Amino acid sequence: MNHLLILDKDAETYLREVEPHNLPDLAIRTAIDSQEAQSLVSDAQIIFGQPALIAEILPQAQQLQWVQSTFAGIEPLCKAHLPTNYVLTGVKDIFGSLMREYVFGYILARERSLLTTHQNQRDKVWYRIPYRSLADITIGIIGLGSIGKSIAKTARHFDMRVLGMKRTADKLDDIDALYLPSAIDEFLPQLDYLVLILPDTADSRDFITAKELSMMKDSAVLINVGRGVTVNQRDLTEALVKKQIGGAILDVFVEEPLPENDPLWSMENVVVTPHNSAYSFPAQVARIFADNYRRYMDNRELLYRVDFSRGY
Image (spheres, rainbow, N blue to C red):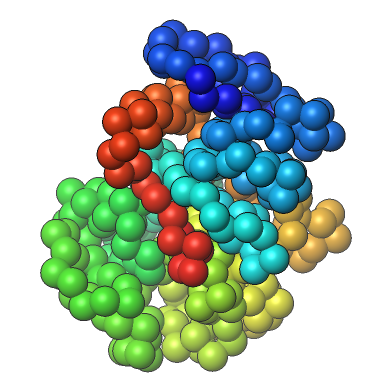
């Protein structure tokens, strides 16, 4: 019998989603925080849950063989002081549609001046605001995993020019030109929109600083839906104040929630959203767990295995 601990603030919801899969030889216990989990973790071979909570009890999980994250971001489990003698699997291929809805919702709102048009309606002002077609716009995507590829595919439907950046020079569908990070000075000046979908790793922290922002058009817009630490927030704020770039659409920040006194809240050229571009829907995540559990029972390779050294 395998012992599973579901450790998540929504543990009961995940339990309700897992039970209908009728997974064999599985005893399930739940906890909503690390304190509650302390008495349950010692004989758990499998933990399914929130990375930050799991990290707190990981040293006590002496029988652990596999962790399935309920979040896309698994950084808390990749800290150097934590054990890595188990298989860690993440959540992928379910956020692409949500992220592309977010990205293109805000691009279209900006390009078609939807908020201003709505205000004009309220004020009974008949005024045709000039706009450009998305077909005349260049979008650049840094982070070409499943989410980045989904955004690129949608950009292609709008006939946008699509540039990408990744660490290896692979040929990808829907990308007009691919750049290595060493060519960032060629990549950034071409962009009308820069979309960042980078994980939190040693290589990605402060990937965009004052130096990179100075390479961008003064009309360009930065969209960050990856991790807040990949952009130097102080440098970004200064660039926005000085109008070195045209604006920013930010769903992630170095500190979350964003402090009330942060100047980003009140900038007219900035959109601030509360890290909600893509939720982990329990039913979808439970399906990933159920599929991986069957693979685990059959001694097959688990889906979305994380490389601890890379952090993703």
